[in-house]
Image (cartoon, one colour):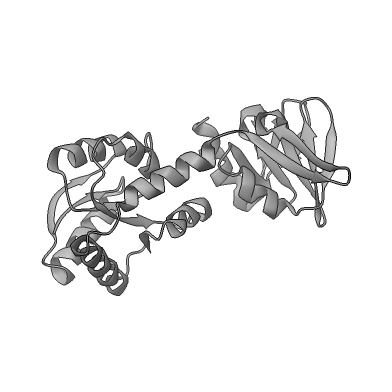
Amino acid sequence: MTALIIDDEKHCRDVLTLLLNRYCPFVQILATCATGAEGKTAIETLRPQLVFLDIEMPGMNGFEMLEACRFNDFQVIFTTAFNEYAIKAIRHNALDYILKPVDKDELVQAVNKAEQERAAHAPKPVEQLLGYLQNQRAGGRIALPTLEGLQIINSEDIYYCESDGGYTHFMLKTGQNILISKTLKEVEEVLETKGFCRVHHSYLINLHYVLRYIRGDGGEVVMANNKALPVSRNKKQEFLSLLEKI
């Protein structure tokens, strides 16, 4: 079974290569790649049967690389640190993933499953995943259940959302404040693929309307309506990382 390893961390590529050579000797590693761009070229040139793919990579992440590939007739095993949105997308499409640091028993199980699915000529899993991702991003319109009924708004009209117990306030560009009977966690599940980031247990913000970030223990983010919102210390790094990609 021919394979590629695509991961921006050299240590991770080396460890995975070692484990595959030792515990899955029937897997022939054609190449290892340090970036999504390198991975795309290698996939289209070498046409592997299996790809071990990291998700969080600079420049072009794993999902973006798959969308850019002209060849996608291969099995995928994602090797990733925990990312709630990524894991949800992977599970939704019944794809396999291994959390870092890689456990040899989980690796062997995932490789055997990929080999069985390839032998059984299972439907192309990459195509299913790409369809899911495209559907998640398609259309910015969302329906808000208010006391008067459903109010349809565009996600790009939202500055931020604020938790209020079991309710959530939507603060809009128009200055309107819409209150709905859903938790911020439920709202986050809808908006997380539309450029929003949870910066605090009480706030979900639209990254496109960030004016500036003020350093601190967690810091503060100033939105386009000049509202300053707190950033939790444990959310700070994820927020800054996503902000760099906007």
